[in-house]
Image (cartoon, rainbow, N blue to C red):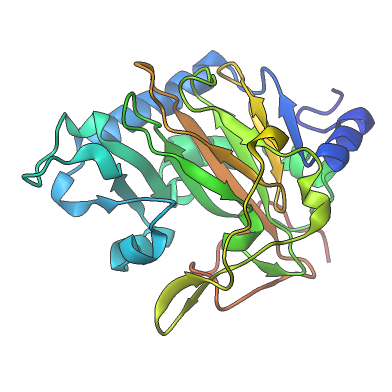
Length: 284
């Protein structure tokens, strides 16, 4: 691949054509083990009373201060199905968490090391970024049996700049299969532009228009081995289904936006007190 992380012309053509790119063996087993072991440590020290529920289906109803403040913190979010009728967890906390976000890449040294690596920087520069910023990070669990569905969406809906510039980077920490909730995407869907936006205003958060209906036959599964990186164009329509298997599907996800010539809009859900540092800034 030449410079480590730099995309080849063939890879760029494929990404521009289908709106996503799968790169096998992007990360070593040592890197994967480092992140999964670090997350175990974070979970061990986590107080369940400080978490809230996350759902991609009921975001307006379940979004509150815990969610908003997570933009600059390491916050924990439970699966919807984690609780019984009595309001108590049905199983241990480490098997009940949906995700941890959204500032792992800034606060935790293990996740920061990967998120700020030269390998990722070279990848982003080859995609055309000039002054990229990681705007959020998430450790995704997709728990066995209860890992919830993530409905079809576009990343630019949630992390909007003018002009749009978001790219998703999704690293498989474990094998992702159809049975345990791998990603699905519609090839070429990024060429149709942004469908709707997720807006934060005085009434909270909401979409500015209803979701279109999608034909499942248009989606293709992205079954990948641990260590594979999936790059997603901000307008690429993608989703994942519930994990109905006995195996988890851990992943680490980053979202990057451009800050050179692109404006972060004030009605995004993320409203930071301190602007994030760019991964790279060109010489003046």
